[in-house]
Image 1: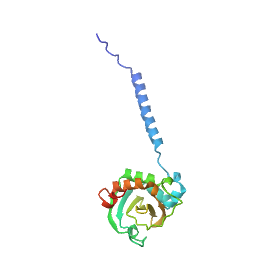
Image 2 (image 1 turned 90 degrees about the vertical axis):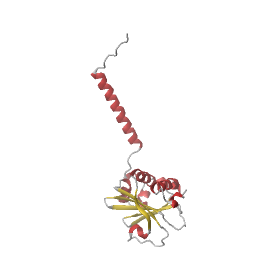
Image 3 (image 1 turned 135 degrees about the vertical axis):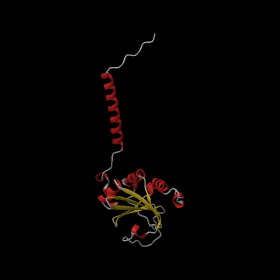
Image 4 (image 1 turned 90 degrees about the horizontal axis):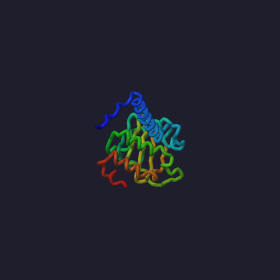
Length: 189
């Protein structure tokens, strides 16, 4: 005859439940520790300057809205009083998914993403703009894939321009994610 297992006591069940909860909490804290939320104070001062100051970095870190535009960057003279500084819009605005925007922010706010000492003599012809907005304040990042450079404009004021050769691959991947049906973007390598 088989023996019937004895029912567990309430104390045993309580201990088991407590250990399970503790294990789950430990895992949650371990995951958060591996990917802490960036703060403006954590960003290299060169990056903060490139992005036109702390408010602009804050827009990128915790936006309420992220949108992207395909533009014709062959315009020779920019006009900061016009939307997208006067570049003709080809497509957009397109809403950027939060995870994609966060992935882009992580790449852009890393000081190792840029060649700080390099300078190029190519014609800046951006084809893509990503706009991060928080509390009505916007930061626009213009990407030129022929030069591998970016330009930052925040609230109509220029931040800086920097080389993006080191992060071309991830930038192209994100551009293809945002504009999956765009032939020019799709042709980027």
